[in-house]
Image (cartoon, rainbow, N blue to C red; front, top):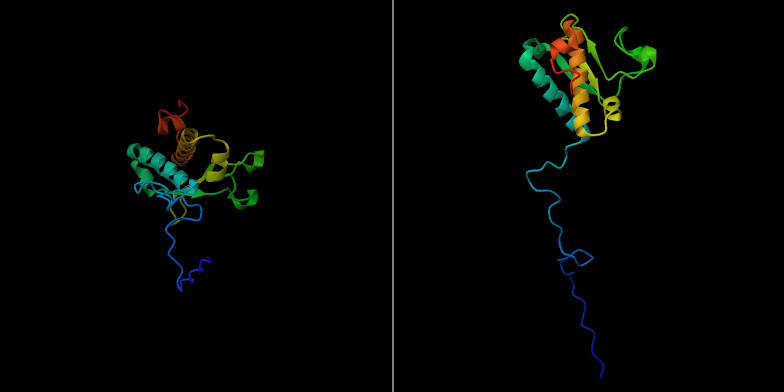
Length: 153
């Protein structure tokens, strides 16, 4: 006896499993964990943590603009005397004094800092050192007087 082939349904059945038969996948991460924290965002957080730490001791830093840039501009694009390009090293940060109605600025360069560090803890230490050095230059003080723990970590 021949078994008749059932007719095809006019609508496809809804898929209840993925094509490998393992079912629907669960969430990638728990809801309290942010999924979109990039390395750049993490770096900005490190700079803000360092600045917050210094502002407690130096309230005048609230008037200073702190920026994060990917890389320093080519040697000729910086104002004279603010870059280390002359001796062949890439600067990790720079300070731009206040000019007219523009506030003083401290710029930290993310990529050169990341290249010189291996992990998050090393990166946090180097970011803090660069911020302290630039603040010291802005205030005309030694880095050790800006942060007594400078160079000890």
